[in-house]
Image (cartoon, rainbow, N blue to C red):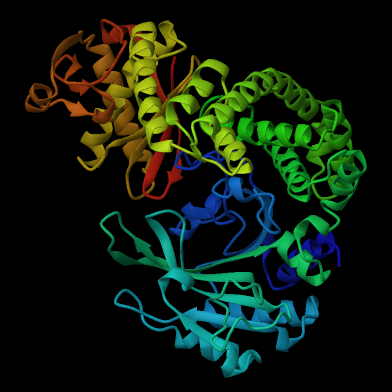
Length: 584
Protein backbone atom coordinates (compact mmCIF):
# COMPACT_ATOMS: atom_id res chain seq x y z
CA UNK A 1 0.00 0.00 0.00
CA UNK A 2 1.44 3.39 -1.02
CA UNK A 3 1.77 6.34 1.35
CA UNK A 4 -0.90 8.44 -0.36
CA UNK A 5 -3.35 5.51 -0.15
CA UNK A 6 -2.74 5.19 3.59
CA UNK A 7 -3.24 8.94 4.03
CA UNK A 8 -6.49 8.93 2.05
CA UNK A 9 -7.81 5.86 3.89
CA UNK A 10 -7.05 7.56 7.21
CA UNK A 11 -8.77 10.84 6.40
CA UNK A 12 -11.79 9.08 4.85
CA UNK A 13 -12.15 6.73 7.82
CA UNK A 14 -12.26 9.54 10.37
CA UNK A 15 -14.44 11.70 8.15
CA UNK A 16 -16.96 8.84 8.17
CA UNK A 17 -16.74 8.93 11.97
CA UNK A 18 -17.79 12.57 12.17
CA UNK A 19 -14.38 14.28 11.92
CA UNK A 20 -13.87 17.39 9.79
CA UNK A 21 -10.74 17.29 7.62
CA UNK A 22 -8.59 20.37 8.28
CA UNK A 23 -5.57 21.42 6.19
CA UNK A 24 -1.97 20.89 7.23
CA UNK A 25 -0.46 23.94 8.92
CA UNK A 26 2.75 25.46 7.61
CA UNK A 27 6.10 24.07 8.77
CA UNK A 28 6.85 27.65 9.86
CA UNK A 29 4.74 28.21 13.01
CA UNK A 30 2.62 31.32 12.74
CA UNK A 31 1.59 31.68 16.36
CA UNK A 32 4.25 29.90 18.40
CA UNK A 33 7.59 31.66 18.98
CA UNK A 34 8.69 28.85 21.32
CA UNK A 35 9.59 26.44 18.49
CA UNK A 36 11.41 26.78 15.17
CA UNK A 37 9.18 24.41 13.21
CA UNK A 38 5.85 22.65 13.49
CA UNK A 39 6.88 19.44 15.23
CA UNK A 40 3.54 17.69 15.79
CA UNK A 41 -0.05 17.79 14.62
CA UNK A 42 -1.27 19.06 17.97
CA UNK A 43 0.96 22.13 17.95
CA UNK A 44 -1.33 24.40 15.88
CA UNK A 45 -4.31 23.16 17.92
CA UNK A 46 -3.08 24.07 21.41
CA UNK A 47 -5.58 26.95 21.87
CA UNK A 48 -8.44 24.50 21.20
CA UNK A 49 -7.02 21.80 23.46
CA UNK A 50 -7.09 24.47 26.18
CA UNK A 51 -10.79 25.12 25.66
CA UNK A 52 -11.10 27.46 22.69
CA UNK A 53 -13.82 26.63 20.15
CA UNK A 54 -12.50 25.41 16.80
CA UNK A 55 -14.54 26.69 13.83
CA UNK A 56 -14.78 23.15 12.43
CA UNK A 57 -16.16 21.63 15.62
CA UNK A 58 -14.99 19.11 18.22
CA UNK A 59 -13.86 16.24 15.94
CA UNK A 60 -10.96 16.97 13.59
CA UNK A 61 -8.56 14.99 11.41
CA UNK A 62 -5.65 15.97 9.16
CA UNK A 63 -2.21 15.21 7.86
CA UNK A 64 0.46 17.52 9.27
CA UNK A 65 3.85 18.29 7.78
CA UNK A 66 6.44 18.13 10.58
CA UNK A 67 10.12 18.87 11.07
CA UNK A 68 12.10 17.69 14.09
CA UNK A 69 15.70 18.79 14.35
CA UNK A 70 17.09 16.84 17.32
CA UNK A 71 18.06 13.86 15.16
CA UNK A 72 19.90 15.61 12.31
CA UNK A 73 23.19 13.95 13.23
CA UNK A 74 21.48 10.54 13.20
CA UNK A 75 20.05 10.93 9.70
CA UNK A 76 21.87 8.44 7.51
CA UNK A 77 21.01 5.42 9.63
CA UNK A 78 18.09 3.15 8.74
CA UNK A 79 15.27 5.08 10.42
CA UNK A 80 15.78 8.76 11.33
CA UNK A 81 14.02 11.49 9.33
CA UNK A 82 14.00 15.28 9.78
CA UNK A 83 10.85 15.97 7.74
CA UNK A 84 7.95 13.55 8.08
CA UNK A 85 4.18 13.47 7.83
CA UNK A 86 1.96 12.86 10.84
CA UNK A 87 -1.63 11.68 10.47
CA UNK A 88 -3.85 12.71 13.37
CA UNK A 89 -7.37 12.81 14.73
CA UNK A 90 -8.60 14.92 17.63
CA UNK A 91 -11.46 15.07 20.03
CA UNK A 92 -11.77 18.52 21.61
CA UNK A 93 -13.92 17.72 24.62
CA UNK A 94 -16.01 15.14 22.74
CA UNK A 95 -15.22 11.39 22.82
CA UNK A 96 -12.50 9.99 25.06
CA UNK A 97 -10.70 6.69 25.65
CA UNK A 98 -13.22 4.03 24.66
CA UNK A 99 -14.25 5.50 21.31
CA UNK A 100 -10.73 6.57 20.47
CA UNK A 101 -9.30 3.10 21.09
CA UNK A 102 -12.09 1.35 19.20
CA UNK A 103 -11.58 3.59 16.16
CA UNK A 104 -7.82 3.01 16.24
CA UNK A 105 -8.31 -0.75 16.45
CA UNK A 106 -10.82 -0.73 13.59
CA UNK A 107 -8.62 1.38 11.35
CA UNK A 108 -5.56 -0.83 11.88
CA UNK A 109 -7.34 -4.16 11.51
CA UNK A 110 -10.10 -3.37 9.01
CA UNK A 111 -8.75 -0.52 6.86
CA UNK A 112 -5.05 -1.45 6.84
CA UNK A 113 -5.73 -5.17 7.32
CA UNK A 114 -3.01 -5.60 9.94
CA UNK A 115 -3.43 -9.01 11.63
CA UNK A 116 -4.43 -8.66 15.30
CA UNK A 117 -1.53 -10.93 16.32
CA UNK A 118 0.88 -8.29 14.95
CA UNK A 119 -0.41 -5.62 17.36
CA UNK A 120 0.73 -4.98 20.96
CA UNK A 121 -0.24 -1.95 23.04
CA UNK A 122 1.06 -0.05 26.06
CA UNK A 123 -0.78 1.97 28.74
CA UNK A 124 0.22 4.31 31.57
CA UNK A 125 1.26 2.50 34.77
CA UNK A 126 0.21 5.35 37.08
CA UNK A 127 2.04 7.50 39.64
CA UNK A 128 1.36 10.28 42.14
CA UNK A 129 0.10 12.59 39.37
CA UNK A 130 -2.39 10.26 37.64
CA UNK A 131 -3.81 6.78 38.26
CA UNK A 132 -2.97 3.54 36.43
CA UNK A 133 -4.84 3.55 33.13
CA UNK A 134 -6.97 0.43 33.57
CA UNK A 135 -9.70 2.06 31.46
CA UNK A 136 -7.55 2.02 28.31
CA UNK A 137 -6.38 -1.53 29.00
CA UNK A 138 -9.98 -2.75 29.32
CA UNK A 139 -10.94 -0.91 26.13
CA UNK A 140 -8.14 -2.67 24.22
CA UNK A 141 -9.13 -6.03 25.64
CA UNK A 142 -12.75 -5.40 24.68
CA UNK A 143 -11.67 -4.37 21.15
CA UNK A 144 -9.70 -7.58 20.62
CA UNK A 145 -6.14 -7.29 21.99
CA UNK A 146 -5.37 -10.18 24.40
CA UNK A 147 -4.23 -9.33 27.94
CA UNK A 148 -0.74 -10.75 27.41
CA UNK A 149 -0.05 -8.11 24.71
CA UNK A 150 -1.19 -5.18 26.88
CA UNK A 151 1.75 -3.64 28.77
CA UNK A 152 2.00 -0.91 31.42
CA UNK A 153 4.85 1.61 31.58
CA UNK A 154 5.58 4.84 33.44
CA UNK A 155 5.82 8.47 32.31
CA UNK A 156 8.99 7.91 30.33
CA UNK A 157 7.10 5.68 27.90
CA UNK A 158 3.41 6.47 28.26
CA UNK A 159 2.96 10.15 29.01
CA UNK A 160 3.02 12.85 26.36
CA UNK A 161 3.71 16.57 26.60
CA UNK A 162 5.11 19.04 24.07
CA UNK A 163 7.95 20.77 25.92
CA UNK A 164 8.16 21.29 29.68
CA UNK A 165 4.73 22.77 30.27
CA UNK A 166 1.30 22.75 28.68
CA UNK A 167 -1.54 20.33 27.94
CA UNK A 168 -0.57 16.70 28.51
CA UNK A 169 -1.73 13.33 29.72
CA UNK A 170 -1.26 9.58 29.71
CA UNK A 171 -1.11 7.89 26.35
CA UNK A 172 -1.66 4.47 24.88
CA UNK A 173 0.70 3.37 22.14
CA UNK A 174 0.31 0.76 19.42
CA UNK A 175 3.23 -1.40 18.27
CA UNK A 176 3.75 -3.54 15.17
CA UNK A 177 5.54 -6.85 15.65
CA UNK A 178 8.05 -7.11 12.79
CA UNK A 179 8.51 -10.83 13.35
CA UNK A 180 12.14 -10.43 14.30
CA UNK A 181 13.29 -12.73 17.13
CA UNK A 182 12.97 -11.44 20.70
CA UNK A 183 16.16 -10.02 22.19
CA UNK A 184 15.61 -12.02 25.38
CA UNK A 185 13.00 -13.37 27.79
CA UNK A 186 11.97 -9.84 28.84
CA UNK A 187 11.65 -8.43 25.32
CA UNK A 188 8.62 -6.11 25.11
CA UNK A 189 7.57 -2.91 23.32
CA UNK A 190 9.93 -0.84 25.51
CA UNK A 191 12.93 -2.56 23.84
CA UNK A 192 14.95 -0.91 21.08
CA UNK A 193 15.91 -4.27 19.57
CA UNK A 194 13.70 -3.72 16.49
CA UNK A 195 11.15 -6.44 17.13
CA UNK A 196 8.44 -3.93 18.10
CA UNK A 197 7.93 -0.68 16.16
CA UNK A 198 5.62 2.04 17.47
CA UNK A 199 2.99 2.94 14.86
CA UNK A 200 0.40 5.10 16.63
CA UNK A 201 0.03 7.12 19.79
CA UNK A 202 -3.28 8.18 21.37
CA UNK A 203 -2.79 10.87 24.02
CA UNK A 204 -5.59 11.44 26.52
CA UNK A 205 -5.05 15.09 27.34
CA UNK A 206 -6.83 15.95 30.53
CA UNK A 207 -4.00 17.66 32.45
CA UNK A 208 -2.00 20.87 32.27
CA UNK A 209 1.59 20.85 33.53
CA UNK A 210 2.72 24.11 35.12
CA UNK A 211 6.27 25.50 35.18
CA UNK A 212 6.64 24.44 38.84
CA UNK A 213 6.00 20.81 37.86
CA UNK A 214 2.47 20.57 39.27
CA UNK A 215 -0.54 19.31 37.29
CA UNK A 216 -4.10 20.59 37.16
CA UNK A 217 -7.11 19.29 35.22
CA UNK A 218 -7.98 20.92 31.88
CA UNK A 219 -11.44 22.38 31.30
CA UNK A 220 -12.14 19.54 28.86
CA UNK A 221 -10.86 16.03 28.13
CA UNK A 222 -9.14 15.81 24.74
CA UNK A 223 -7.79 13.08 22.51
CA UNK A 224 -4.69 13.86 20.43
CA UNK A 225 -3.30 11.14 18.18
CA UNK A 226 -0.31 10.78 15.87
CA UNK A 227 0.52 8.14 13.25
CA UNK A 228 3.80 8.48 11.31
CA UNK A 229 3.05 7.99 7.62
CA UNK A 230 6.54 7.05 6.40
CA UNK A 231 6.98 4.46 9.15
CA UNK A 232 3.56 2.88 8.57
CA UNK A 233 4.19 2.75 4.82
CA UNK A 234 7.54 1.06 5.40
CA UNK A 235 6.02 -1.62 7.64
CA UNK A 236 3.04 -2.37 5.41
CA UNK A 237 5.34 -2.70 2.40
CA UNK A 238 7.66 -5.02 4.31
CA UNK A 239 10.63 -2.70 3.84
CA UNK A 240 13.56 -2.43 6.25
CA UNK A 241 13.90 1.38 6.05
CA UNK A 242 11.76 4.34 4.94
CA UNK A 243 14.34 5.08 2.24
CA UNK A 244 13.06 2.06 0.30
CA UNK A 245 9.45 3.29 -0.01
CA UNK A 246 8.20 5.18 -3.06
CA UNK A 247 8.61 8.60 -1.39
CA UNK A 248 12.40 8.20 -1.45
CA UNK A 249 13.24 5.39 -3.88
CA UNK A 250 13.33 7.40 -7.16
CA UNK A 251 15.90 9.81 -5.72
CA UNK A 252 17.81 7.04 -3.94
CA UNK A 253 18.01 5.09 -7.20
CA UNK A 254 19.18 8.15 -9.14
CA UNK A 255 21.87 8.86 -6.55
CA UNK A 256 23.10 5.28 -6.90
CA UNK A 257 23.36 5.76 -10.68
CA UNK A 258 25.30 9.01 -10.29
CA UNK A 259 27.70 8.10 -7.50
CA UNK A 260 31.29 7.11 -8.15
CA UNK A 261 31.95 6.12 -4.53
CA UNK A 262 28.78 4.49 -3.22
CA UNK A 263 27.99 4.99 0.44
CA UNK A 264 24.46 4.13 1.60
CA UNK A 265 24.61 6.51 4.56
CA UNK A 266 25.62 9.44 2.36
CA UNK A 267 22.87 8.63 -0.15
CA UNK A 268 20.30 8.60 2.66
CA UNK A 269 21.58 11.92 4.02
CA UNK A 270 21.33 13.55 0.58
CA UNK A 271 17.85 12.12 -0.08
CA UNK A 272 16.49 13.04 3.36
CA UNK A 273 18.04 16.50 3.67
CA UNK A 274 17.05 17.46 0.13
CA UNK A 275 13.41 16.52 0.74
CA UNK A 276 13.38 18.30 4.12
CA UNK A 277 15.00 21.43 2.67
CA UNK A 278 12.52 21.53 -0.22
CA UNK A 279 9.56 21.34 2.15
CA UNK A 280 10.94 24.08 4.45
CA UNK A 281 11.73 26.40 1.51
CA UNK A 282 8.27 25.72 0.08
CA UNK A 283 6.69 27.01 3.32
CA UNK A 284 8.78 30.20 3.34
CA UNK A 285 11.99 29.15 5.09
CA UNK A 286 15.27 30.68 3.93
CA UNK A 287 18.89 29.94 4.94
CA UNK A 288 20.46 32.26 7.52
CA UNK A 289 22.79 32.18 10.50
CA UNK A 290 20.09 32.12 13.17
CA UNK A 291 17.23 29.94 14.34
CA UNK A 292 15.23 28.07 11.67
CA UNK A 293 17.30 29.67 8.91
CA UNK A 294 20.40 28.10 10.41
CA UNK A 295 18.73 24.68 10.54
CA UNK A 296 17.88 24.97 6.85
CA UNK A 297 21.42 26.12 6.06
CA UNK A 298 22.78 23.19 8.04
CA UNK A 299 20.59 20.69 6.12
CA UNK A 300 21.60 22.09 2.73
CA UNK A 301 25.29 22.20 3.62
CA UNK A 302 25.32 18.70 5.06
CA UNK A 303 23.58 17.47 1.91
CA UNK A 304 26.14 19.29 -0.26
CA UNK A 305 29.08 17.79 1.60
CA UNK A 306 27.72 14.28 1.15
CA UNK A 307 27.09 14.85 -2.55
CA UNK A 308 30.76 15.71 -2.83
CA UNK A 309 31.63 12.66 -0.77
CA UNK A 310 29.70 10.53 -3.26
CA UNK A 311 31.61 12.37 -6.04
CA UNK A 312 28.35 13.50 -7.63
CA UNK A 313 28.42 16.70 -9.69
CA UNK A 314 26.70 19.41 -7.62
CA UNK A 315 24.93 20.65 -10.76
CA UNK A 316 22.71 17.56 -10.35
CA UNK A 317 20.84 19.25 -7.46
CA UNK A 318 18.33 20.83 -9.86
CA UNK A 319 17.65 17.48 -11.51
CA UNK A 320 17.17 15.79 -8.14
CA UNK A 321 14.64 18.52 -7.25
CA UNK A 322 12.75 17.70 -10.46
CA UNK A 323 12.61 14.00 -9.51
CA UNK A 324 11.26 14.83 -6.03
CA UNK A 325 8.65 17.24 -7.38
CA UNK A 326 7.42 14.58 -9.81
CA UNK A 327 7.46 11.95 -7.03
CA UNK A 328 5.66 14.06 -4.40
CA UNK A 329 3.42 16.43 -6.40
CA UNK A 330 0.24 14.47 -5.69
CA UNK A 331 0.91 14.59 -1.95
CA UNK A 332 2.32 18.12 -1.82
CA UNK A 333 1.15 20.10 -4.87
CA UNK A 334 2.78 23.21 -3.41
CA UNK A 335 6.16 21.76 -4.49
CA UNK A 336 5.16 22.08 -8.13
CA UNK A 337 4.11 25.71 -7.64
CA UNK A 338 7.36 26.61 -5.85
CA UNK A 339 9.78 24.44 -7.87
CA UNK A 340 11.81 27.31 -9.34
CA UNK A 341 12.11 29.10 -5.99
CA UNK A 342 13.26 25.88 -4.34
CA UNK A 343 15.96 25.41 -6.99
CA UNK A 344 17.12 29.02 -6.73
CA UNK A 345 17.47 28.89 -2.92
CA UNK A 346 19.25 25.51 -2.94
CA UNK A 347 21.70 26.41 -5.70
CA UNK A 348 22.54 29.80 -4.19
CA UNK A 349 23.24 28.25 -0.80
CA UNK A 350 25.23 25.41 -2.40
CA UNK A 351 27.43 27.92 -4.24
CA UNK A 352 28.10 29.83 -1.03
CA UNK A 353 29.11 26.66 0.74
CA UNK A 354 31.40 25.16 -1.92
CA UNK A 355 34.18 27.66 -1.24
CA UNK A 356 33.74 27.25 2.50
CA UNK A 357 34.00 23.49 2.13
CA UNK A 358 37.11 23.58 -0.03
CA UNK A 359 38.99 25.94 2.27
CA UNK A 360 37.74 24.33 5.47
CA UNK A 361 38.46 20.75 4.42
CA UNK A 362 41.97 21.74 3.35
CA UNK A 363 42.66 23.30 6.74
CA UNK A 364 41.01 20.39 8.53
CA UNK A 365 43.35 17.93 6.80
CA UNK A 366 46.32 19.97 8.00
CA UNK A 367 44.95 19.85 11.56
CA UNK A 368 44.52 16.06 11.35
CA UNK A 369 48.07 15.58 10.03
CA UNK A 370 49.47 17.81 12.78
CA UNK A 371 47.54 15.93 15.50
CA UNK A 372 48.76 12.57 14.17
CA UNK A 373 52.37 13.76 14.04
CA UNK A 374 52.04 14.71 17.70
CA UNK A 375 50.53 11.33 18.51
CA UNK A 376 47.13 12.81 19.41
CA UNK A 377 43.69 11.43 18.65
CA UNK A 378 41.84 14.68 19.26
CA UNK A 379 41.35 17.98 17.40
CA UNK A 380 41.70 20.83 19.89
CA UNK A 381 38.92 23.38 20.39
CA UNK A 382 41.06 26.30 19.21
CA UNK A 383 41.45 24.62 15.80
CA UNK A 384 37.69 23.95 15.60
CA UNK A 385 37.03 27.62 16.44
CA UNK A 386 39.60 28.87 13.92
CA UNK A 387 37.95 26.77 11.22
CA UNK A 388 34.61 28.34 12.15
CA UNK A 389 35.77 31.95 12.52
CA UNK A 390 38.26 32.14 9.64
CA UNK A 391 36.71 29.79 7.10
CA UNK A 392 33.03 29.75 8.12
CA UNK A 393 33.36 26.00 8.65
CA UNK A 394 30.48 24.76 10.84
CA UNK A 395 31.49 23.05 14.10
CA UNK A 396 29.15 20.12 13.46
CA UNK A 397 30.87 19.36 10.14
CA UNK A 398 34.28 19.42 11.86
CA UNK A 399 32.89 16.90 14.37
CA UNK A 400 31.50 14.76 11.55
CA UNK A 401 34.78 14.80 9.61
CA UNK A 402 36.75 13.98 12.74
CA UNK A 403 34.47 11.03 13.44
CA UNK A 404 35.12 9.72 9.94
CA UNK A 405 38.84 9.92 10.69
CA UNK A 406 38.36 8.06 13.99
CA UNK A 407 39.22 11.20 15.96
CA UNK A 408 37.52 13.19 18.72
CA UNK A 409 36.98 16.93 19.04
CA UNK A 410 37.68 19.09 22.10
CA UNK A 411 34.22 20.70 22.28
CA UNK A 412 34.44 22.26 25.76
CA UNK A 413 37.23 24.58 24.65
CA UNK A 414 35.36 25.38 21.43
CA UNK A 415 32.17 26.22 23.37
CA UNK A 416 34.12 28.60 25.63
CA UNK A 417 35.73 30.38 22.68
CA UNK A 418 32.43 30.49 20.82
CA UNK A 419 30.63 32.10 23.79
CA UNK A 420 33.35 34.76 24.04
CA UNK A 421 32.95 35.38 20.30
CA UNK A 422 29.16 35.74 20.69
CA UNK A 423 29.59 38.22 23.54
CA UNK A 424 31.95 40.38 21.46
CA UNK A 425 29.51 40.23 18.55
CA UNK A 426 26.66 41.23 20.84
CA UNK A 427 28.52 44.24 22.21
CA UNK A 428 29.49 45.27 18.69
CA UNK A 429 25.91 44.90 17.57
CA UNK A 430 24.67 47.08 20.41
CA UNK A 431 27.13 49.80 19.39
CA UNK A 432 26.13 49.54 15.76
CA UNK A 433 22.39 49.31 16.21
CA UNK A 434 21.99 51.27 19.47
CA UNK A 435 20.15 48.52 21.27
CA UNK A 436 19.82 45.81 18.72
CA UNK A 437 17.27 47.25 16.30
CA UNK A 438 18.87 46.19 13.05
CA UNK A 439 16.23 47.98 10.95
CA UNK A 440 16.45 51.23 12.84
CA UNK A 441 14.33 54.07 11.53
CA UNK A 442 11.63 56.44 12.76
CA UNK A 443 8.91 53.81 12.43
CA UNK A 444 10.68 50.98 14.25
CA UNK A 445 11.85 53.35 17.01
CA UNK A 446 8.26 54.52 17.47
CA UNK A 447 6.98 50.95 17.63
CA UNK A 448 9.72 50.03 20.11
CA UNK A 449 8.55 52.84 22.40
CA UNK A 450 4.92 51.76 21.95
CA UNK A 451 5.71 48.27 23.27
CA UNK A 452 6.63 49.87 26.63
CA UNK A 453 3.28 51.64 26.82
CA UNK A 454 1.46 48.47 25.77
CA UNK A 455 3.29 46.36 28.36
CA UNK A 456 2.35 48.69 31.22
CA UNK A 457 -1.24 49.06 30.00
CA UNK A 458 -1.64 45.26 29.89
CA UNK A 459 -0.40 45.03 33.47
CA UNK A 460 -2.89 47.68 34.58
CA UNK A 461 -5.84 46.00 32.84
CA UNK A 462 -5.02 42.29 33.22
CA UNK A 463 -2.79 42.17 36.30
CA UNK A 464 0.82 42.06 37.42
CA UNK A 465 1.26 38.50 36.15
CA UNK A 466 1.64 39.93 32.64
CA UNK A 467 5.24 39.70 31.47
CA UNK A 468 6.77 40.17 28.04
CA UNK A 469 7.53 36.85 26.34
CA UNK A 470 8.80 38.19 23.05
CA UNK A 471 8.29 40.90 20.46
CA UNK A 472 8.81 41.48 16.79
CA UNK A 473 8.91 44.91 15.21
CA UNK A 474 8.80 45.90 11.56
CA UNK A 475 8.13 49.24 9.88
CA UNK A 476 4.53 48.10 9.41
CA UNK A 477 3.48 46.87 12.87
CA UNK A 478 4.47 45.62 16.29
CA UNK A 479 3.90 42.10 17.60
CA UNK A 480 3.94 41.62 21.37
CA UNK A 481 3.79 38.28 23.21
CA UNK A 482 2.89 38.24 26.89
CA UNK A 483 1.97 35.81 29.64
CA UNK A 484 -1.76 35.50 30.24
CA UNK A 485 -3.82 32.34 30.76
CA UNK A 486 -6.87 33.14 28.64
CA UNK A 487 -8.12 35.17 25.72
CA UNK A 488 -8.23 38.91 26.32
CA UNK A 489 -11.81 40.15 25.97
CA UNK A 490 -12.76 42.92 23.51
CA UNK A 491 -13.60 45.14 26.50
CA UNK A 492 -10.16 44.59 28.01
CA UNK A 493 -8.46 45.26 24.67
CA UNK A 494 -10.40 48.54 24.35
CA UNK A 495 -9.23 49.59 27.84
CA UNK A 496 -5.61 48.77 26.95
CA UNK A 497 -5.86 50.71 23.70
CA UNK A 498 -7.42 53.72 25.45
CA UNK A 499 -4.71 53.77 28.15
CA UNK A 500 -1.92 53.72 25.55
CA UNK A 501 -3.53 56.51 23.52
CA UNK A 502 -4.05 58.57 26.68
CA UNK A 503 -0.29 58.44 27.39
CA UNK A 504 0.44 59.41 23.79
CA UNK A 505 -1.90 62.42 24.05
CA UNK A 506 -0.25 63.47 27.32
CA UNK A 507 2.98 63.92 25.32
CA UNK A 508 5.10 62.38 28.08
CA UNK A 509 8.88 62.83 27.93
CA UNK A 510 11.00 59.70 27.40
CA UNK A 511 14.15 59.87 29.54
CA UNK A 512 17.11 57.48 29.50
CA UNK A 513 19.38 56.92 32.52
CA UNK A 514 22.31 54.57 33.04
CA UNK A 515 22.57 52.78 36.37
CA UNK A 516 23.56 49.48 37.92
CA UNK A 517 21.18 46.56 37.57
CA UNK A 518 20.59 46.64 41.34
CA UNK A 519 19.76 50.38 41.25
CA UNK A 520 17.40 49.78 38.34
CA UNK A 521 15.54 47.11 40.29
CA UNK A 522 15.28 49.34 43.36
CA UNK A 523 13.90 52.16 41.22
CA UNK A 524 10.99 49.92 40.21
CA UNK A 525 12.10 49.38 36.62
CA UNK A 526 10.70 46.31 34.88
CA UNK A 527 13.54 44.03 33.80
CA UNK A 528 13.13 42.29 30.46
CA UNK A 529 15.64 39.64 29.48
CA UNK A 530 18.01 40.79 32.20
CA UNK A 531 20.57 38.11 31.42
CA UNK A 532 21.60 39.93 28.24
CA UNK A 533 22.74 43.04 30.12
CA UNK A 534 25.99 43.72 31.94
CA UNK A 535 26.49 45.46 35.29
CA UNK A 536 25.32 48.80 33.88
CA UNK A 537 21.91 49.07 32.25
CA UNK A 538 19.84 51.70 30.50
CA UNK A 539 16.52 52.55 32.09
CA UNK A 540 13.91 54.33 29.99
CA UNK A 541 11.29 56.27 31.93
CA UNK A 542 8.15 57.46 30.14
CA UNK A 543 6.75 60.29 32.26
CA UNK A 544 5.05 58.97 35.40
CA UNK A 545 3.72 55.93 33.51
CA UNK A 546 6.42 53.42 32.61
CA UNK A 547 9.96 52.47 33.63
CA UNK A 548 11.86 49.62 31.94
CA UNK A 549 15.36 48.28 31.52
CA UNK A 550 15.93 48.40 27.76
CA UNK A 551 18.64 48.87 25.16
CA UNK A 552 16.62 51.42 23.21
CA UNK A 553 16.33 53.48 21.06
CA UNK A 554 13.08 55.39 21.71
CA UNK A 555 11.31 58.57 20.71
CA UNK A 556 11.80 61.70 22.84
CA UNK A 557 8.11 62.44 23.47
CA UNK A 558 5.09 60.13 23.26
CA UNK A 559 3.14 62.52 21.00
CA UNK A 560 5.52 61.44 18.23
CA UNK A 561 3.83 58.03 18.15
CA UNK A 562 0.51 58.94 16.54
CA UNK A 563 -2.61 56.85 17.25
CA UNK A 564 -2.23 53.31 18.66
CA UNK A 565 -4.58 50.67 17.26
CA UNK A 566 -4.79 46.98 18.26
CA UNK A 567 -5.45 44.88 15.15
CA UNK A 568 -5.45 41.37 16.54
CA UNK A 569 -5.26 39.36 19.78
CA UNK A 570 -4.62 35.62 19.61
CA UNK A 571 -2.99 32.64 21.29
CA UNK A 572 0.74 32.39 20.74
CA UNK A 573 1.59 29.29 22.77
CA UNK A 574 0.58 27.65 26.02
CA UNK A 575 -0.17 30.45 28.52
CA UNK A 576 1.07 33.12 26.12
CA UNK A 577 -1.06 35.59 24.16
CA UNK A 578 -0.07 37.77 21.22
CA UNK A 579 -1.14 41.27 20.24
CA UNK A 580 -0.53 42.81 16.83
CA UNK A 581 -0.90 46.57 16.68
CA UNK A 582 -0.17 49.54 14.43
CA UNK A 583 0.54 53.25 14.82
CA UNK A 584 -1.64 55.37 12.56
